[in-house]
Length: 147
Image 1 (cartoon, one colour):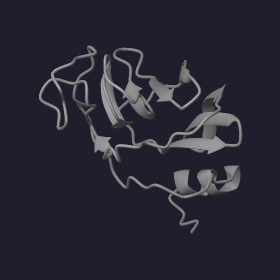
Image 2: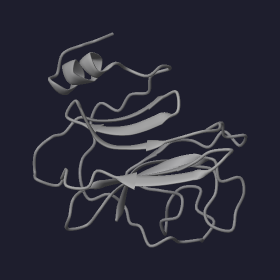
Image 3: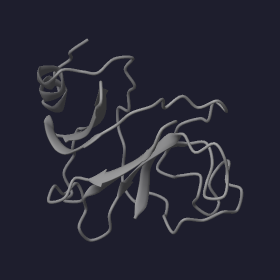
């Protein structure tokens, strides 16, 4: 698995765990999201939805109330429930294409989790202070501005 996006305060054996890792699976090419909140751990994937097919894909992680989803090309491709805060008391930066538990990664403390640097490209990464609607996600996936 390779890291697409990571905002994780610590690796295994460290604290606090609050944060997230978005990873791409090897041959299957699906996305896997791991989230640590103040209440619980959640992990789920976009089983059956590949992003390693040589095409550009629009990917969004959306939290709305108690629901968390990974959206690919404007459609929900994986969902799970979520509770608690994602607040990171250490103000961990967001890493693109690598996670904190990857050898040689910025902020790495030497702990490894078997993931690797992303072998691919990222473009137009954005963060929004609210959950985007299904129509906004669809418009963005089509390259239309929604803000």
